Length: 247
Ligand SMILES: NC(=O)c1ccc[n+]([C@@H]2O[C@H](COP(=O)([O-])OP(=O)(O)OC[C@H]3O[C@@H](n4cnc5c(N)ncnc54)[C@H](O)[C@@H]3O)[C@@H](O)[C@H]2O)c1
Image (cartoon, rainbow, N blue to C red):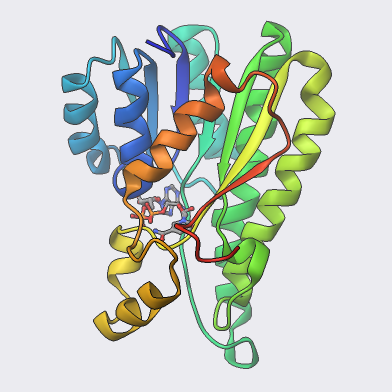
């Protein structure tokens, strides 16, 4: 087991990519601190992670865009385990629209929930990780944070910001043996992409080299690598997991 007894804090763990990462970490023996907007969103993930063999699961709730709520989640993790080995920033939303029509509110909401949240969690976890002199942080960005996407000015900016935040985090914390990396998924089958029309999905598939949408497990596999000792010399990187959409 690659993560035996490591303490992993995962946001947005109630479904989709966050759930898949939680279960993959559980299979590798990690103790989990799961977070979502409401604890009840985490019931299914808790059951799956238990079945997968996690030795300890703590459920927390809060809005990742609010500093006080983030600090409370991190405090619960530290009160329970006295350390945090792994942080995975997954929680995110979309509020799409063409730039010329986009409201200031939609811009602010997406930037706060997707980007500011990663800053808040990284800041709160950096202190205990610095004390431990070890830690691994993974930010779930997006391919559109690299390539841009019409209709997603707010979302693509938030994900591009996450990639830059990852690099800076890696530079600031490397001396303390803390690594930070990002994953940039392409189109992954979750509730987030359920919103897209079947016609658009078929059109997208034509552009994906491997000819299919990704599964949450495709992202979880890379997340396990990035938080395990197998990647102990990898930091500040963004790994694109998009089936060959952008090459
Ligand atoms: N699905 C894709 O194709 C895709 C592609 C690239 C990147 N991503 C990114 O991966 C991450 C997960 O995406 P997903 O597809 O699993 O999405 P999802 O909508 O299925 O899950 C997102 C989770 O985040 C939680 N969340 C939302 N707002 C929150 C808030 N303010 N505070 C706390 N929790 C909150 C939701 O409750 C949900 O459990 C997101 O950051 C998303 O941008 C997804």
